[in-house]
Image (cartoon, rainbow, N blue to C red; front, side, top):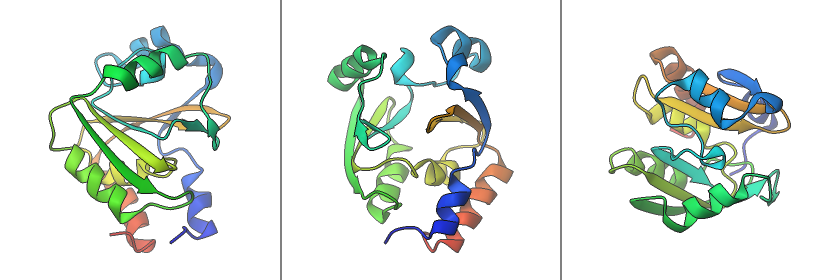
Length: 164
């Protein structure tokens, strides 16, 4: 079931620190994050990546595609696939996300549909101290350090959406 517009509006606000597109580079992310699991498209291998191969509902063709293509060929120990229609957070995707957290890393989740809103359940289920990175359309990269308050906020939102 698609999410109500009031929840989509809430999810469009960054959950963490927004780094504007013009400042997103491998070097700057290394400086900012130190020893964490940043993003594939700038040459890192995250512990868990969630990909749908699209940007703003179009096939991804950005300047970092060679790194992404190489990662898709050989970058994961475990790979899962799930369906998650646009504007939703499916129970299937939530189940796969939970399962991926107990696997050996790196894990890749390929989403048929749209992965845009799947950061929310990641905030709920990721371990305290983890760093979660996700793209904020037309703005940049959002970095969220998982803390109990972040987990509570995400869980409360998912409860209100009747997803948990």
